[in-house]
Amino acid sequence: MNMRRHLALTRAGIMESLQYRLSTAVTLFANLIYLVLVYFLWKAIYDSAGTDVVNGMTFTDTMIYLILATALFNFLEMFVVWDMSRSIQSGKIILDLLKPMKFREYTFWSYSGGHVIQFVLTFIPTFIVVMIVTHGAINMGVNLLYFIVATIFALIVNFNMEMIVATICLYTESTWGINIVKETVVLLLSGASIPLAFFPEAMRKIVDYLPFRAVYDIPLTILLQKDGTDTIKGVLPMYGLQLAWIVILTICGTLFWKHAVRKITVNGG
Amino acid sequence: MSECTTINESKRPRRGLRFYASIYRKILVQDLKSKMSYRADFVISTIGMIMTNLSGFVTFLILFKNFPSINGWDYHHMLFLYGFSLIALTPVQCFFDNNWNLRFQVQSGDFIKYCFRPINVFFYFMSEVFDVKGLGQLAFGIGTLVYAWVNIGIPVTPWVIVKLVLFLLTASLFMIAIMNAAAATCFWIIGSGYVMVIMFRFKDFAKYPSNIFHGVFRILFTFVIPIAFVAYYPSLAILESDNIPVLTWCAPALGLLFFYLSYKFWMLGVKKYDFTGS
Image (tube, rainbow over all chains, first blue to last red; front, side, top):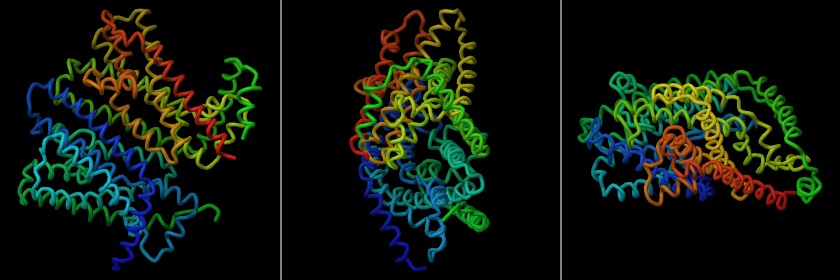
C-alpha cells in the first residue's frame, strides 16, 4: 500500500473544499443558530421536568450531546450517493473504475480531504463555542484522545454505510428516496435527533446492537464519559463494537459492490 | 437578455385566475405523467417520506416518555401543534418543491427557458413540479391533528373550522416565503443549496411552542426567520380561543406580506439573471 497516492487524494480534496469557503462559513453560522434553538428547547424541557437529571443526562450533557452530534453530522456528511448517481449518469464513473486503485479505496480517500477541512473549520469552532457556553463542562483529559479515535472509527463505519446505500441505488435508480430513508434511519437510531439515553428500555436493547450507534452515539458517549467510559476498561468494548461493525460492513460492502459493478449500465459515452 | 423583461413586464396582457388555473392543470398532468414513468422511484420516495414522518413521530413519543410537558404544553397540545405544523408544511412541499431545482437550473443556464414564456416566471417555474409525496405528509398531519383535537375536546363549530382553514393557509405562507427567499439566494451566490438545507432544518423547530425562546432570539424567530408563525401563533387561534394574542390576529396580514416580499426577492433574482446571462 502506497500511502503517497492516498495522501495526494486527500490533498486534492482539501484544495477542492477550500473553494467553498462561503459554504463552510454559512454552515458554521447555521450551527451556532442551531445551537441556540437546541439550547432554548432543552432548557424549556428540563425546566418543565422539575429534576436536573433525566436518565443519567443533565441539561448540559444533553446540550453538548446534541450540538456535537450536529457538528459531527456536518463533518461526516458524504455525498457518495449523489455523486455516484451523477457520475453514472454522466459516465464519469468509467474513468474512476479504470483508476489504478480499488474504487472503494479511491472514493474513501477522495472524500478524506473534505473531512479534514470540515473538521478544522466547522467541528473545532463549534466545539470551542460549546466549551465556552457550558463553562468547560467537557472534561479535558484523555477522553478527548479516546473521542478522536472513536470518531475515526465512526468515519469508517459511516463511509461503509454510505457505500452500501449508494450501491443499492445502482439497482433502484432512485436516489432521493433511498437517501432520505438512510438519513432518517441513521439520524434517529444513532442518537443524533434525541440522545439514545432517552430511548425506552426495549428499544434501547435493539438499537445498541445496530451499526448506527457506532457513528454518533459512541464517540459522544465517550466524550461525555457516560456509561462507564471514564476508564479505558469501559472504552474498549465500545471500540470493539465499532471495529466489529467496520469488519462486517467492509466485507458486505465489498462483496455487494463487486456484484453490482458488473450491473452498471452507462448510457451513451 | 432584454426580451425577457419586455415580454414579462410591459407587453404582457393581464391574465385572469382562470387562465392560470388551466395552464397549471396542463403542466401538472405532464409532470405526473413523467413521474409515473419512474414508478420504482416514486414508490421508494413515498416510503422515504412516510419514514421521515414516522421518525419525527417516534422522536416525539420518546421525548414525552421522559418529560411530561414542555413549558406548560402537555402531550395532546403538543400533538396538536405537531399535526398543525405538518399540514401547514404541505403546500410548500407539494406546490413549491421546484425551488430545490432552482440552483441547478440557474447554474446550468436552463433557467432561461422560463423567461421566454409570456406568463409569470415565478408561476411557470413553480407549476412545473407537483410533489405527490407531500400528500402523505398531509394525511399524517390530519390524523395527528384530529386525534389531538378529540383528546383536548375542542368543540367543532363552523366558526372554528373557518378559523382553522384560514390559519392553516396563513401558516403555510410563512414556510413558502422562507423557502422562496432561501432558494432565491442562488441568483447571487453560486451553489447556495446549503442555505435551503439549513432553513429546511429550522422548520423542525416549528412544532415546538415558540414561547420557549427569549430575548433577541424570540424576535429573530418571529420576524426574521418566522418559524414561530409556521405553527405556534396560528394554532393559538384554535387552542386559546378566549385569549387570542395580537400576533395571531396579525398573522394573515404578515403571512401575505412575507410571501409578497419573498416573491419580490425571487423576481429580483430573475431580473439580475437577465442581466448577466446571455
